[in-house]
Image (cartoon, rainbow, N blue to C red; front, side, top):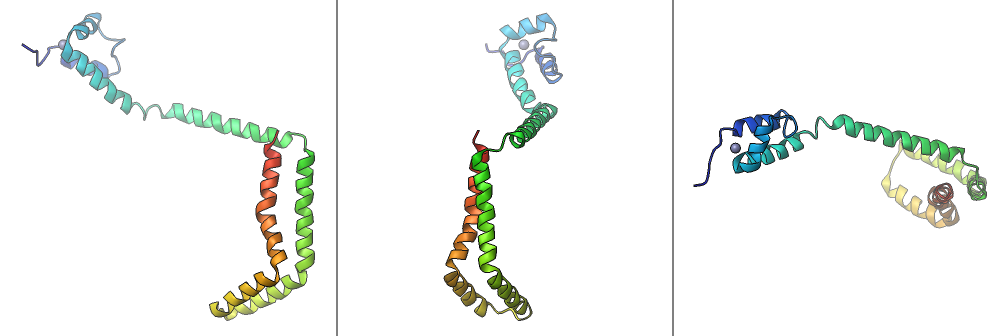
Length: 166
Ligand SMILES: [Zn+2]
Protein backbone atom coordinates (compact mmCIF):
# COMPACT_ATOMS: atom_id res chain seq x y z
CA UNK A 1 0.00 0.00 0.00
CA UNK A 2 1.31 3.39 -0.97
CA UNK A 3 1.89 5.78 1.85
CA UNK A 4 -0.15 9.01 1.52
CA UNK A 5 1.06 10.96 4.52
CA UNK A 6 4.03 11.08 6.82
CA UNK A 7 4.51 12.30 10.38
CA UNK A 8 7.73 14.11 9.39
CA UNK A 9 6.20 15.93 6.41
CA UNK A 10 5.50 19.12 8.40
CA UNK A 11 9.00 19.07 9.89
CA UNK A 12 10.58 18.80 6.46
CA UNK A 13 8.36 21.56 5.09
CA UNK A 14 9.12 23.99 7.90
CA UNK A 15 12.84 23.19 7.64
CA UNK A 16 12.82 24.06 3.91
CA UNK A 17 10.81 27.26 4.46
CA UNK A 18 13.17 28.35 7.22
CA UNK A 19 16.13 27.65 4.91
CA UNK A 20 17.40 24.95 7.26
CA UNK A 21 17.07 22.19 4.66
CA UNK A 22 19.12 20.10 4.12
CA UNK A 23 22.22 21.26 6.02
CA UNK A 24 20.80 22.45 9.33
CA UNK A 25 18.24 19.79 10.17
CA UNK A 26 18.46 16.77 12.43
CA UNK A 27 20.43 13.97 10.80
CA UNK A 28 17.61 11.53 11.32
CA UNK A 29 15.10 13.78 9.51
CA UNK A 30 17.51 14.01 6.57
CA UNK A 31 18.00 10.24 6.64
CA UNK A 32 14.25 9.78 6.78
CA UNK A 33 13.68 11.97 3.71
CA UNK A 34 16.09 9.80 1.74
CA UNK A 35 13.87 6.78 2.24
CA UNK A 36 10.49 8.55 2.44
CA UNK A 37 8.91 9.42 -0.89
CA UNK A 38 6.52 11.96 0.63
CA UNK A 39 9.20 13.90 2.51
CA UNK A 40 11.53 13.82 -0.50
CA UNK A 41 8.72 15.32 -2.61
CA UNK A 42 7.94 17.94 0.01
CA UNK A 43 11.60 18.94 0.19
CA UNK A 44 11.93 19.11 -3.60
CA UNK A 45 8.76 21.12 -4.21
CA UNK A 46 9.20 23.47 -1.27
CA UNK A 47 12.86 23.90 -2.20
CA UNK A 48 11.92 24.94 -5.74
CA UNK A 49 9.41 27.46 -4.40
CA UNK A 50 11.96 28.82 -1.95
CA UNK A 51 14.53 29.15 -4.73
CA UNK A 52 12.12 31.25 -6.79
CA UNK A 53 11.26 33.36 -3.76
CA UNK A 54 14.90 34.01 -3.00
CA UNK A 55 15.31 35.99 -6.20
CA UNK A 56 14.06 39.00 -4.26
CA UNK A 57 16.41 38.78 -1.25
CA UNK A 58 19.17 38.15 -3.81
CA UNK A 59 18.68 41.71 -5.11
CA UNK A 60 21.64 43.18 -3.19
CA UNK A 61 23.81 40.68 -5.08
CA UNK A 62 22.55 41.68 -8.51
CA UNK A 63 22.82 45.30 -7.42
CA UNK A 64 26.46 44.69 -6.66
CA UNK A 65 26.94 43.10 -10.08
CA UNK A 66 25.30 46.15 -11.68
CA UNK A 67 27.53 48.47 -9.65
CA UNK A 68 30.64 46.57 -10.69
CA UNK A 69 29.57 46.79 -14.35
CA UNK A 70 29.04 50.53 -13.93
CA UNK A 71 32.46 50.99 -12.40
CA UNK A 72 34.11 48.94 -15.14
CA UNK A 73 32.32 50.94 -17.85
CA UNK A 74 33.43 54.19 -16.21
CA UNK A 75 37.03 52.99 -15.93
CA UNK A 76 37.00 51.91 -19.58
CA UNK A 77 35.59 55.28 -20.62
CA UNK A 78 38.34 57.08 -18.71
CA UNK A 79 40.95 54.83 -20.31
CA UNK A 80 39.46 55.51 -23.76
CA UNK A 81 39.74 59.27 -23.21
CA UNK A 82 43.27 58.93 -21.86
CA UNK A 83 44.35 56.90 -24.87
CA UNK A 84 46.73 58.67 -27.27
CA UNK A 85 44.84 60.39 -30.07
CA UNK A 86 45.33 58.50 -33.32
CA UNK A 87 45.84 59.95 -36.78
CA UNK A 88 42.39 58.68 -37.75
CA UNK A 89 40.80 60.66 -34.93
CA UNK A 90 42.62 63.82 -36.01
CA UNK A 91 41.52 63.22 -39.62
CA UNK A 92 37.92 62.69 -38.52
CA UNK A 93 38.01 65.86 -36.44
CA UNK A 94 39.54 67.85 -39.32
CA UNK A 95 36.84 66.47 -41.63
CA UNK A 96 34.13 67.62 -39.25
CA UNK A 97 35.57 71.11 -38.97
CA UNK A 98 36.05 71.36 -42.76
CA UNK A 99 32.50 70.19 -43.44
CA UNK A 100 31.06 72.58 -40.88
CA UNK A 101 33.11 75.47 -42.27
CA UNK A 102 32.06 74.64 -45.85
CA UNK A 103 28.41 74.40 -44.88
CA UNK A 104 28.32 77.61 -42.90
CA UNK A 105 30.42 79.51 -45.45
CA UNK A 106 28.41 78.35 -48.46
CA UNK A 107 25.05 78.90 -46.85
CA UNK A 108 25.32 81.90 -44.56
CA UNK A 109 23.22 84.08 -46.89
CA UNK A 110 20.76 81.26 -47.43
CA UNK A 111 20.68 80.70 -43.68
CA UNK A 112 19.85 84.35 -43.03
CA UNK A 113 17.07 84.43 -45.62
CA UNK A 114 15.74 81.15 -44.30
CA UNK A 115 15.76 82.62 -40.82
CA UNK A 116 13.81 85.68 -42.05
CA UNK A 117 11.38 83.44 -43.90
CA UNK A 118 10.92 81.25 -40.81
CA UNK A 119 10.28 84.32 -38.67
CA UNK A 120 7.60 85.45 -41.10
CA UNK A 121 6.09 81.99 -41.22
CA UNK A 122 5.79 81.76 -37.44
CA UNK A 123 3.05 84.41 -37.45
CA UNK A 124 1.22 83.00 -40.51
CA UNK A 125 1.86 79.27 -40.62
CA UNK A 126 0.42 77.57 -43.69
CA UNK A 127 1.37 73.96 -44.51
CA UNK A 128 0.42 74.51 -48.16
CA UNK A 129 3.38 76.89 -48.57
CA UNK A 130 5.77 75.01 -46.30
CA UNK A 131 5.78 71.77 -48.30
CA UNK A 132 6.58 73.35 -51.72
CA UNK A 133 9.20 75.52 -50.04
CA UNK A 134 10.85 72.51 -48.43
CA UNK A 135 10.78 70.64 -51.75
CA UNK A 136 12.33 73.61 -53.57
CA UNK A 137 14.87 73.99 -50.80
CA UNK A 138 16.02 70.39 -51.10
CA UNK A 139 16.04 70.63 -54.91
CA UNK A 140 18.12 73.81 -55.04
CA UNK A 141 20.39 72.93 -52.14
CA UNK A 142 21.14 69.31 -52.91
CA UNK A 143 24.81 69.78 -52.05
CA UNK A 144 23.92 71.45 -48.76
CA UNK A 145 21.53 68.64 -47.84
CA UNK A 146 24.20 66.10 -48.72
CA UNK A 147 26.65 68.05 -46.56
CA UNK A 148 24.28 68.09 -43.64
CA UNK A 149 23.52 64.39 -44.01
CA UNK A 150 27.27 63.75 -44.02
CA UNK A 151 27.71 65.86 -40.92
CA UNK A 152 24.85 64.29 -39.04
CA UNK A 153 25.42 60.66 -40.00
CA UNK A 154 28.78 59.99 -41.62
CA UNK A 155 31.10 61.97 -39.35
CA UNK A 156 29.83 60.57 -36.03
CA UNK A 157 30.08 57.06 -37.46
CA UNK A 158 33.63 57.74 -38.66
CA UNK A 159 34.60 59.20 -35.28
CA UNK A 160 32.95 56.30 -33.49
CA UNK A 161 34.84 53.79 -35.62
CA UNK A 162 38.11 55.66 -35.08
CA UNK A 163 37.65 55.81 -31.31
CA UNK A 164 36.29 52.28 -31.11
CA UNK A 165 39.42 50.92 -32.80
CA UNK A 166 42.36 50.09 -30.56
ZN1 LIG B 1 8.43 11.11 5.58
